[in-house]
Image 1 (spheres, rainbow, N blue to C red):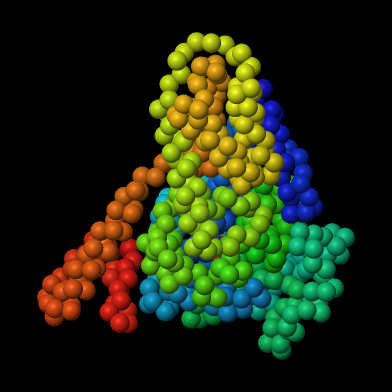
Image 2 (image 1 turned 135 degrees about the vertical axis):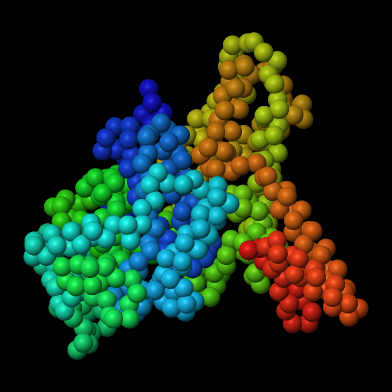
Length: 504
Ligand code: AMP
Ligand code: ZN
């Protein structure tokens, strides 16, 4: 019997709003698509939470024995500043401001994204397709939608006809977000005279490129570039089939992005594309969504180094991973120094038990005699599976691991004797504790006690530099700054002689 049969999974499906039994389309296989980052800026901690959620989900699916094809895209064109298909392309704008080629911007921020993913031990997806690598397919599906009467061309741009789609599908638009098409007509700005859309609810599949627009491709409608939503429809169905198991993303993408994805795919293929929609909730700061535009976001590197003004000190990547896993993915998670300090302590406890359980050796022999302790330990092992199979409840799984850690500590302190449990039960305890910590939750042993060491060393050098400046030894103070910069440590001088640093 496979583990996924022994521990059947339930998943909260955003389509129904209910917890449902998970059944994959092909037994033993799972296809999962997650909207990846728009690579025009450094990823912030909020973005990282979403990717960490789906990393943990794909890890657990694999742990249960499924073969998972996990597709997470890179958005490198078509994401405009406004959801109403207006404003500049985010990547094009950054390229203009920094006087770089758009693909230089894409490369820089894709690399940063990958670095951050590695720091958090977020595993790479099976396929990481880019929007610019799938222009041909995006043009083709747009042609199909026009041929079916679900899209129309105006002046070199093509728009999806939401009203027409809704009539053909008996009101399917809004199926995911719960938005009512009539209410959508009443809300939002009216179309102005220059707007080409027939209806303000319509959205762009293809946009005509103005002469100044750098990112452009030839199409049957002239030079242009794809809309944002169409890329995900193309890349998900190309690699996972017209109907696939799981589609994920942050809650903020439900509308319009995911609603539009459903409409495009259903319009083109006459079937709903996704069986289970999973949305992970937002990381907030003082109750407000962390976002670049609100100015309350900070970078993982600032969090590790403790250099952001909101931070009292730095925290290691694994402490932050643990902090995020302590809440269920469907709840908001509020960032605070207190919570991170508590997470630091909690994670150390689990780590200490990990070391102990690895070092303990069972005296050997003995078959299960069903002592109370054996029963307790076996029940805890079972609970790890049950809590994770209950809609990937990492918070409850961590609570079970804490309970296991206490039992493990009892063996070390002599409060309990290993002879009370059989070798079989002990090895199950070992495998379950390590398996859930490392493989499922991705919490690796802290390699970076080095992190604190690095932080401490830089602070000593900063003190020396401060002293050099007070003594007007500017040659030495500049030398410290320059030599640190050469190895990737950037010192910043603030007001009143304060000094902070960041790692490049
Ligand atoms: P973007 O690069 O803006 O397209 O966002 C990449 C991913 O990060 C999307 O799935 C967003 O839903 C997600 N995201 C953005 N802000 C937050 C936040 N504060 N908390 C959690 N996820 C977020
Ligand atoms: Zn998407």
